Image (cartoon, rainbow over all chains, first blue to last red; front, side, top):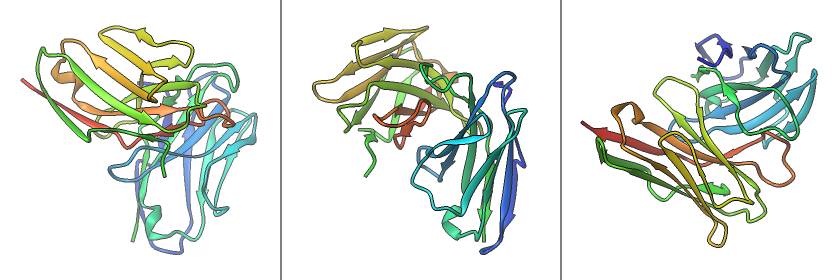
Length: 115
Length: 114
């Protein structure tokens, strides 16, 4: 177990709705990255937060947004949900932003279904 | 398209045999690669990593090989066990991306036959 916890584990929404997913990083980790994993695919990088600021973003539209809090926990928000947003959303925490290894610690994910 | 991909989507091996999982990458400037294991219902788990200044790196029962000439990465698992059954992803940290902003391939499903 990595110590990264995500909530909720499963949720169902309808098109056009908004969703907030939450992540508590492993103790002491100051960087949180979010990934989207469609069924049968590898994870895709959404964005990363370091010290409460966005520190890089993948190819996702602005309706995907995030926050990081002083305790390093994080939220992923998705507005105007589309059917293609159905996926497993993974949160990963790490200790350093630069010079570190790729040893991201992933949570178990939040499974979002959009109907 | 994706800069990281895999040659085989599925692989079945007999328990005790060695497994080899392959990965091709397209960005010759990538300098850092990682293998992850993902079991059903769980998040990816770090297995082993390698930087581009190395050709080979060994861990416990696992070896990663990097061939920069043909942009190929492989993961070798020795004496494969039933607990190794999972989907394996290679990932790269592309140039220009920050640390941990990884590009993953589609994955190879490894099934171990008891």
